[in-house]
Image (cartoon, rainbow, N blue to C red; front, side):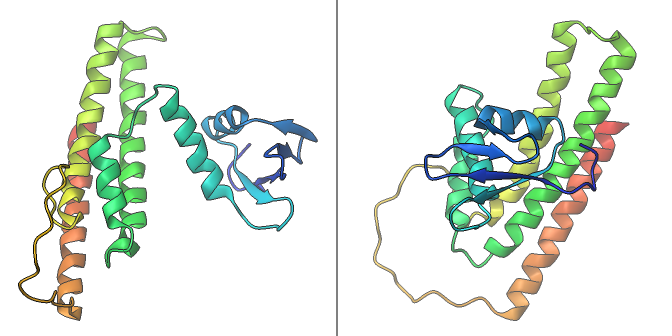
Length: 199
């Protein structure tokens, strides 16, 4: 479906069945996943309450893909993400991740074009894997740049609780301004990495 068109409405019923109102048929999470891959926009509503539950359904699709063995989300990244829930920086995380994924997507498209131009429709598998690995390294580097915001917790191993020496000092407006500057600097570095990869 071309971008800009009205999103397709999907209704989720109490029996967990999903109904595509555009096609007047029931669909599965696999169907919705394919719609996402095809660039079709949709919103999911709870049929009883009318609540928009698109986010939870998309999250469920990711969960299902991960359960199938399509593991794309590193454990360390998931833990860092969980730690940021409730943190004062939680509000800047969605924008940062969205910008990072947009940069990653642009880089991915450039790689596809280079593969097609160099090797045709069926490139040698080894060459494609090399490029894919390079692209994933770029994304992991972007996530590492984001890691300092994860409350400065190195490693994933839990630490024994310690008695607090002093009460935590609340962040000031100056601290938040400084963090915002650091975030902008990291975004510039991310864009520079994307440009370097594209050259």
